[in-house]
Length: 130
Image (cartoon, one colour):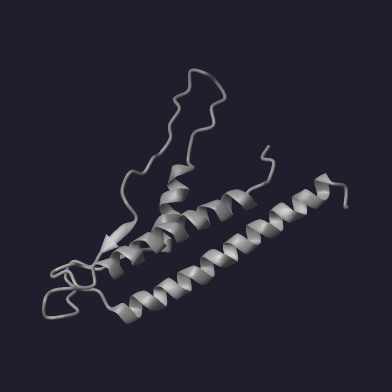
């Protein structure tokens, strides 16, 4: 039995995605003037699929049954290899990166607000409604 149910765990996974996305965007912005640098991106769908496959394991009714677990070691970060935005081979579009950064910041803040709300509710329950 989980103390918080699946909500806190799901929100934690969302925060991990938002953090990875933010690091990727920051790396793209930092390399905006690097020749032949290819912009990178993080796909939410890919991160979700990776997390779902990590959770698969066997339910064993007998100790003689084989136990298995699927683990993913590949990165969820993709690179646009054949994309050139400028003549120097750089694939970073600052307008796109800034828009994605703003969108990711809103998403991250929404998750933080939801976690705070969940923890405040638990705090109220622990204190007996006071």
